[in-house]
Amino acid sequence: MPRCKKHRCCRMLDGDKIFKPRSTPLAELKMAEIFLDEFEAARLCDHDGISQIAAAERMKISRGTVQRLLEAGRFKIIDALLHDHAIRIHKQ
Image 1: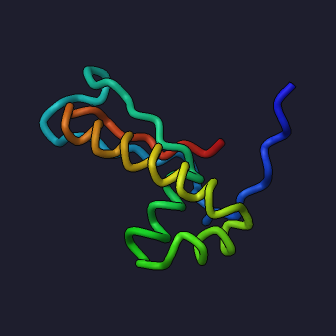
Image 2: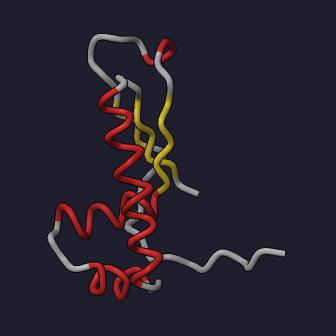
């Protein structure tokens, strides 16, 4: 039986955020789901430029978890951009 998911400190979002290519209606696009913790790890490390260790301290998780979240989030974002998918930042 898997362990319960640890609470992760992330910035608050009012609801799900969706980004899509301008030229295609949302109904015609595949949706890439980015979870809030994946987005937060990418924001802290890539946008704010802090280390994985500092991001882990802010999110109250291990550095290894931050690394795994970064890998998953970056892959989903790049894949969506390359294949013209919409991106949803999904609150869990």
